[in-house]
Length: 105
Image 1: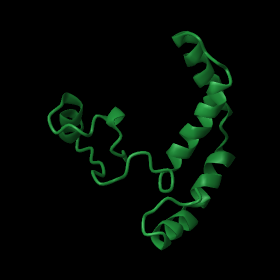
Image 2: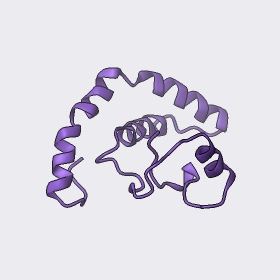
Image 3: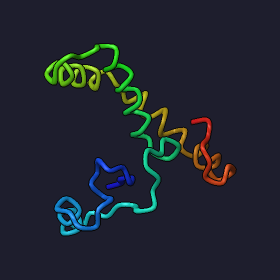
Image 4: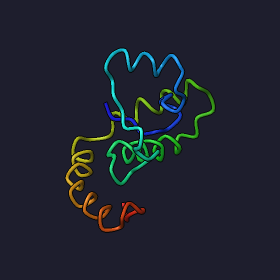
């Protein structure tokens, strides 16, 4: 399991139930992984696409938001996901060249 340090993953606090459960299950995560790191994390790019598509729905209720997420998630193709995966060697090389600074991705 790869998680960044985004607070939504409940990884920031050293003393909380979510973190304790993950550790008890042997789930490890990268403490030094930058929060929202699209250069090195394919899922961040997929979330960006999903957010853009869902935003177009302009949901007004939790139910409308849920419906939009389900419908738009199903539209994401393996081809799109694989495009991001295939870019990883270039992404890694550019991150190294830029000494960890933001890249074109």
